[in-house]
Length: 138
Image (cartoon, rainbow, N blue to C red; front, side):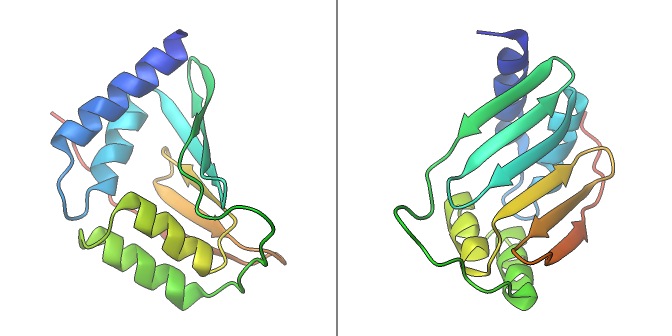
């Protein structure tokens, strides 16, 4: 196992052990940033996640939210925001969040851990950017 994978997995385990149920993403992001993860790019519906770390890039595969041939839903900014607020309130699982943003037309999202924002992309140049707060990790 590479240093990049070991570091990423250790950071993910640590983040999940201290992550609050409500508003937990900023904690996860701060731990990953502290471990040298600079960015993260998710591709939907495959749930493929690429992490850009100081030790090299790593791919992690999640559970796909769709399979086979699918029409891509229309980009729906309001539905994306509803999915975000539901997740931020601790009222959904991560898998349910991915499914909700897929249904809202998101085909990819990119996390910039240094800038503390996430950009959600649809087709035809549609996108939505959301900043998240910085948190201190002891």
